[in-house]
Image (tube, rainbow, N blue to C red):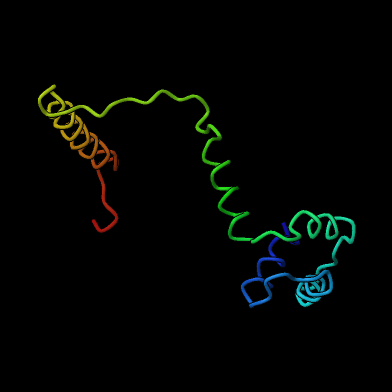
Length: 112
C-alpha cells in the first residue's frame, strides 16, 4: 500500500508516469524504505496504463464483490401496514425506562 500511495502522490503532483527513483524519494521523505522487488512489480503492472482507467476498472470489479456477511434485508414497515404503532410503543417503553433509572438513586440526592 505504501508503494501505491507514493505512486498516486507522484501522479497527483503532475508526474503521469513516475519512475522507481521518484517513488523511492517520496517514501524516503516519509522515512520508509522501499522494497525494490515490489516496486519493480508495481511499475511493470502500471507501465503504459492511465491510472484513472486502472482505478475505474478496479471500482467496477470491487462493486461486484458481495459484502455484508449474508444478513437478510428487511423492508421497513409502512404506516399503512401498521408500522406507526410499534414506533409509538417503543417511545412509551423508552419513557418508562427513564423513570425507572431516575428512581434508582436510593432515595437521596447529591444536593440534599
